[in-house]
Length: 625
Image 1 (cartoon, rainbow, N blue to C red):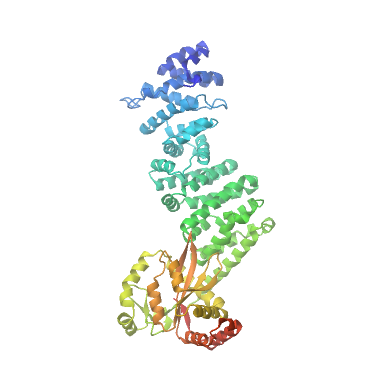
Image 2 (cartoon, rainbow, N blue to C red):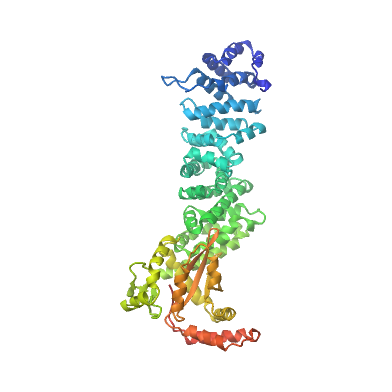
């Protein structure tokens, strides 16, 4: 036992206190109450320390009753004495020095906190009391380490977190400041043992998400917090660090997304970024960059399609701009996740029409921020302009499509037919609902001698089980690929690359890939086998598309979109259909006429030949399906 906890120290007390302290140390409830009141009235730190042995004695776990309350519901004397001892030791915080005998005190304090947390009598909120003790022992490194390693501490901390919301003014409760410090310094939820303690208290990830969202709404988003900006920024960073630690558990991260945590964090980041004129930039840099670290990690886990739309709706764009200005002195800003989101993730999201529909008014709404001279001087401004230009290009394209009255076109599912016409003029297979036919005869031919008898059921099953976007986004992506393919990339030089691949890989089917990584589009050619091996997630029904292309007689070529989706690449097949095989046949003639020695190839001459072929067949109708 630590010397300061021995009852002999009571001899140092004046007789007026010793007459109560001695019987109180033996469990007298009346004397315990009187001593606690006298100490509160005196406010004397030295006298308080001499009385610590009294409270230590009343926390002896040997005195733990079977039940804290008597039959009438009142606390037993032993339990009530323990409550008095805990309240006296936890505060008001006497002086700035740590409590003496920290490890010995902690073991007894913890035993009673666990006891009260189990029975939860009205006289004491065990979780809040624990938060006060964690703060009380914080100057004592040895005791703090002991607390951190105590099994179950985080469970009761989480109970305290929930109890704080029952305070009359929860945003003003000192316990939240202690909770925030614990989140920053000691929660360590990335350790599976500690995470298990957390989840026990919240009844799983869903309850945890609810608790985090409530914390953000009360401590960061409440309008009354605007007058306490520094404290609010600290609360914001505390919850960010906690959420970062939780990202090691995928199931928890998923529950946080569906529970609205990321949306609440983005709203909070937007609110804190508005403190730019009230708090020094260096105090805001860390929490704002921490937010973009969290956002990027969730984008990696779940993809832009699931995250960006929600984040844009609650202020992502102004948050990016203000954070750029807050971090103007940060060295090598291009290595931060703030830069990565603006340079890659946001541009990549412009392939979704649902995102573009949001972006139009949002870009107008932040013009006053982007016109500021200080923003134009930042390294991030050039990155912003590139995103801005790309977004408006695709917004304009989306609006043009909305004005078009013509229905989309389809190609007949009988690959020997090749008819291309308005989608409304076709009939669709009633089972798989994926293949269209221009006539009953074509449907019969494809069923009997084509591949559809075998493929119909598997196509339906594949459509139902694969991850996919909604139809509006798929339709827009198809139109975007068609524009980029026919206007930008399907040219003489492109087909010269196709010929080169055909020469290097004789007899192997080829696929044209349109990669939208980073937002822009890059086109290249690969063999089907090479690309198929990379499709480890089975995004594409390869057997069906390869079979259809082989039956098309050169009227169908395979085009694939590569789109980053979190930590993986998602693949979407949009085959290019033609109503004539003239282009395919012409390419074969050019290939057969080329010299066998590749050194004798004249690329410019090949390109000219291809351009002549394209000009001669410019009336060929081509669509992406």
